[in-house]
Image (cartoon, rainbow, N blue to C red; front, top):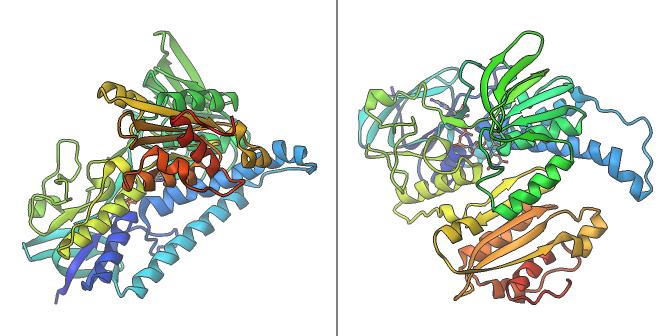
Length: 474
Ligand SMILES: Cc1cc2nc3c(=O)[nH]c(=O)nc-3n(C[C@H](O)[C@H](O)[C@H](O)COP(=O)(O)OP(=O)(O)OC[C@H]3O[C@@H](n4cnc5c(N)ncnc54)[C@H](O)[C@@H]3O)c2cc1C
């Protein structure tokens, strides 16, 4: 006998579990299916983000930053550390504990919201609008019928052609987060968010890190001024970043040898102890049974959706990494909430222009809205104002005055069009830019708001003042 639900969500990553919670809050009888499991075979909801993405990477970034501070920054504070050492096994065990806390938190939230959780692979097996049939295979085997179904099956790492992941020598994000000993020479293919974050972790712990990037520009999606600053600060830390690289061969053996042509077209060969490949992610639809019901995928394998996350089939929606748009956990969450609300007849809304981007290197990099290049290309008249952390009292007290905050505002109306930052804790500061843009604020609004002193947020206020060329502290 099949179990009937108003809403069935396939996938319990940030998109899926958030969607399930919002659907349950709205009064729908809701189920969520997820196949991720711990080494012991227990359910591990949370998807890529919780298990091998956002959360474990931030845990390792924190551990490695603590290690680096203890070795390099504490002395200035009069703190002498003798016998400093890193126990990688303990660091990884802590990371695993943080992940488990998040898995358990999601299981608790399912119970609290009376969401039926099924552990296993969910696939469409038939049905029609109003009654889609979904089979669960695995420990939570079941047959479900859904009035509304949401596909939130996420993404998988993309491999280099001819160099499949073995997670011993050639590592995906999962392997990169579980290297048992600090490698002497670490290669990273791809200077995107994941490559820079993973490269930073292992460099801080003592690896010699070389990042190979196919594109000729560094952080092309970021504002040029911020990307230039990031290049200066990250290469100064010892990350060797080579741009415009074309990889011709990856060979295993004693370590990994990568052959490539450099930006000048010269043939190069480098040997690494391990190679992290972070060249993007591909949508994950294997096992979903899309073909059984005629669910349409686009030419790149994403589930095809319209602006409202509706698929070609009535009552089937898709959200998160498995559909177009930025592959970010908070984008997936927002789509999950919006879809649940649309099902309830409400007006869920996601504006990609106010989705913030963050790279958790040291210093952090964050932005929202348009870059100067984009505004120039679009012929928009704008005013820019920036403020460096060197002139911020809290940053001096913290001992981290690297970077700046910058606002871009419409030249006529002063409406904020973008905020860009590199510096301490800008992952937190960027929220002010997001709120301002969502409320259609002008740079003058930020400039006139009282900010606590001393705080890093004062650099945000000063950058807004700089748009009108009236900074106070510089
Ligand atoms: C190393 C790394 C660091 C990252 N850091 C950040 C960050 O700091 N900030 C950020 O915003 N984003 C970050 N991301 C990206 C973020 O993880 C993804 O954007 C996010 O996880 C997408 O969420 P999702 O719900 O769409 O899919 P996922 O998180 O991929 O979850 C999909 C879930 O569905 C399950 N599933 C798939 N098919 C089926 C099926 N047929 N039946 C049952 N279950 C199924 C999967 O096993 C998985 O559990 C990072 C990614 C990586 C790899």
